[in-house]
Image (cartoon, rainbow, N blue to C red; front, side, top):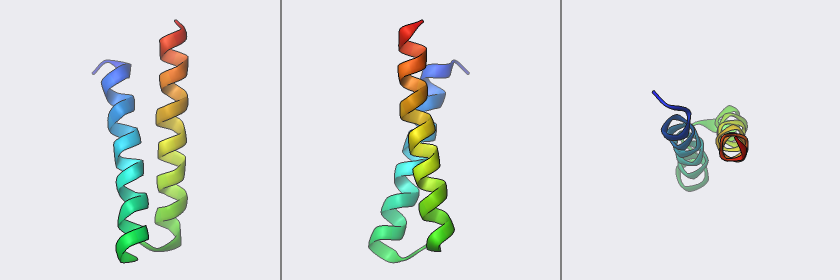
Length: 52
């Protein structure tokens, strides 16, 4: 898989975890940190890939 679609998927999973926790209390505190981490990696990776 190419980096660009993979980073979109990672950011989407991170955003999904954040929304699931925010609206439903679904995954707990660990889900918030994991969601934030995945979202930061996805968005940060986009900037790195776009600069090349």
